[in-house]
Amino acid sequence: MTVVATSFFQDPHFIEALYIVAFTLFIVGLRGLAGPRTAPLGNRLAAVGMFIAFIATLLIQHVIKSGSDVALMAGGILVGTAIGIPAARNVRMTAMPQMVALFNGVGGGAVALIAWVEYRRRFPEGGELWSAKSQIPSLFAAIVGSVSFWGSNIAFGKLQEILPGRPIQLPGQRIINAVFALVAISSAVVLASGVHSQALFIVGILVAAAVLGNMVVLPIGGADMPVVISLLNAFTGVSAAMTGIALDNTALIVAGTLVGASGSILTNMMAVAMNRSVPAIVAGGFGGGGTAPAAGDEERGPVRSTTPDDVAIQLSYASRVVVVPGYGMAVAQAQHTVRELMDELEKRGVHVDFAIHPVAGRMPGHMNVLLAEANVPYDKLKEMDEINPEFPQTDVSLVIGANDVTNPDARENEGSPIYGMPILDVDKSSQVIVLKRSMNTGFAGIDNPLFYGENTALLFGDAKASVQAVVAEVKELG
Amino acid sequence: MDIMTDIAILVLAAWVGFEVISKVPNTLHTPLMSGTNAIHGIVLMGGLLVLSSAAGALNKLLLVIAITFGTINVVGGFLVTDRMLEMFKGKRPEPRSEEDAGK
Image (cartoon, rainbow over all chains, first blue to last red; front, side):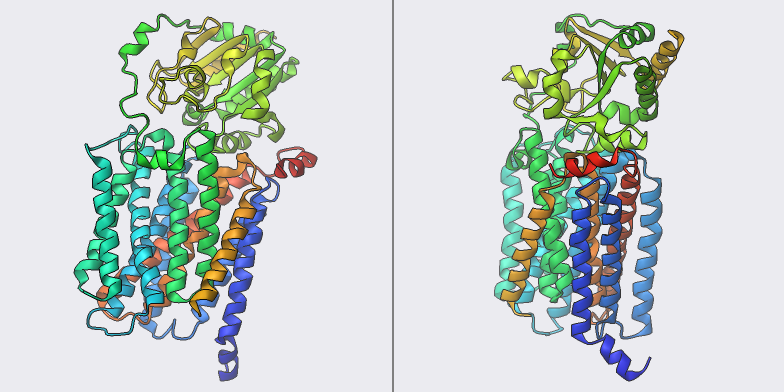
């Protein structure tokens, strides 16, 4: 490359122009994600934007100074790619939420590490001047990034069932959390005000924020986890934007803020769907001790269990069937078999729809992804508000591994921890068939009176095996 | 850059984020979360920016970890989103999707 060409490509204006192209692609990409048809392209455009931002960053003067730095960068990128590609390729669709949590966590971790180095570069011996404009956002990023990293790891642990999904809480949890938040913030204030500049304080910030991240997520029940992941996603976005202000980098500011804004909206939408408020979720577990013990099951009286051939007959002679999929279907990987059942029933003139609760599975859209994978037509997937008025005209509701989202207690029992959460009114259909592995409670750990209803029958077993048996019986009927 | 310019950019970007996202149908929330998650992997650039000017083995080590983390975030995030979205592709009557997206 000639000297002239080098100076052109390294011209700050050229780099800014590349950044503008990059974040325009992020915005266009996000817009694309708004429609099912445009979403794959949208995601790819955003990825192209990221690649352009990457090239632009490398072009900035002094970013590449020596061969050894290039080797370090290449090393980090290679290792990251070697971990990221197989993780993304091999993760099962059911494990998607925790994968998002993990990817979010490492992003937050990167933010915290950069902030730490920023501190180490400026203090104590270095003596480079650290302007308030760079310092305050950096310290903010250190706190938020660290909270996001540790919180996401706990969320991953809970969803992966390494940690128990139920809320884990210490007495006086809120006070403890407040103390750690105070330690982190006051350490940051001490550093920023220049009273002290010891390494103790930055380590104090990172450690206090780490403990806070753990403490805030541990008491949150598994059912609220998607909201938490979404919230932490927004946090990471905001902390990336703060890193951008500290490092004077437009791409980071815009991309981070876009994620912070979109993540907040998404978090709120999810919380609203569960009739919960974000502060209430963050403040603590699912109704504290409101979880029903196993003994509660006996008191409810007997449940009626059924057999695959009975189910096949009920379904085949119905005119309208609504399938309510839940996490159980995802775990059993039953979506393809369910699609097969739909095809068989439609052949016999049964009208089949799918009722998708906004938080069915463990993340909004979880069921849609799975059913789309199984080639269920998009227009068969009905959202809650659309399908609820239709349940009274439904002959059979087939609940496949869903529990809490069908719990009538949410509508009727003010004492229930999930009271007020909008549910699918399956209990209003003439017949309800519930496919369940056992009488265990759902993710929220509470009992479901739907199972004891007069019009309800339960088919016990693995969702996939049960649906397969039903499909076989439907075919038998000829 | 001037701090007020940064804040102006931040405010405008936040509005764009709010406006763009409020139009996403419920069904695409998981891919959307995953996609936005990939975008904040932009912090990778932060690691690259600082690496050369940070002296000392510990600093370099911390930044290499940050770059590794950022790369996992970007590469994993976009790939996993792509995998999810592939499943939506071309499997529905075309005329409906526009109208659904408008909700």
